[in-house]
Image (cartoon, rainbow, N blue to C red; front, side, top):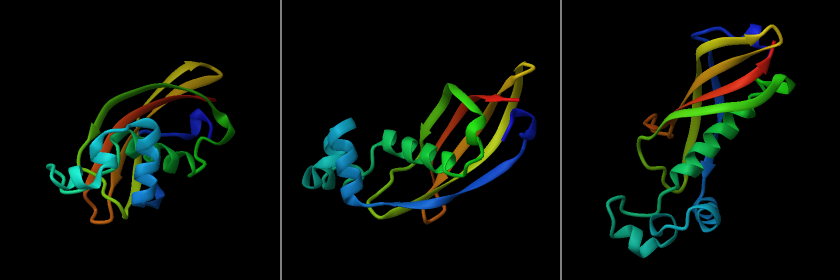
Length: 141
């Protein structure tokens, strides 16, 4: 979609994605090797009572689900900012998550482009919010 096709209040719904224990440990092994993502015994003794997904993985999956809607298509130029990132609740193995995306701000930069800011709100299969963050992207007009 071109910049001019977005409007404030516009809402998009993504498909869902299930995160398995293997998905969580594989990601954490490479990008966030902390015990709560890798060590089942130690994680089971902690505040979350088991392994949880990295917040960075939750952010990445939320972004992936949004991009897979195809809303930006080939009109995206580049990301410009991520703000107000909140990891609200843990994501556990076999949770299925989906993201609701709302356009919250539009700023025309030039006649050829503008910045679209969206709020990503990600929910688990119990409809509990697990993640929230703002993403701004430069899009062709």
